[in-house]
Image 1 (tube, one colour):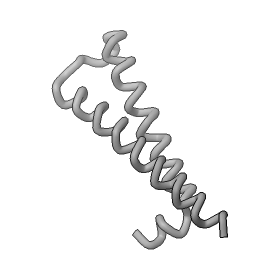
Image 2 (cartoon, rainbow, N blue to C red; image 1 turned 45 degrees about the horizontal axis):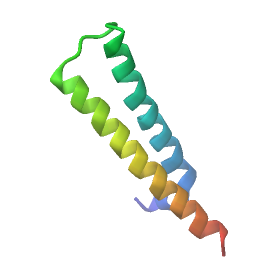
Image 3 (cartoon, rainbow, N blue to C red; image 1 turned 90 degrees about the horizontal axis):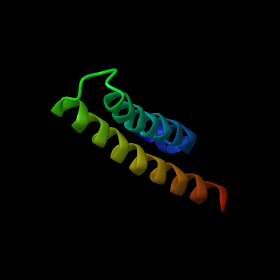
Length: 68
């Protein structure tokens, strides 16, 4: 965990990837490329929510480091 806090860009990148996954999974389910299951719906929601939280934490840490 200490390594992630040293580099907030890593948190931002992981958050962006999770947000992208949270958008692409429902899109593929609506287009019926992949079947819509309860697990995939929950995974898309969890990825979107955790990506938003990780991105916010990364942005706050980036701001705290660069304002000193």
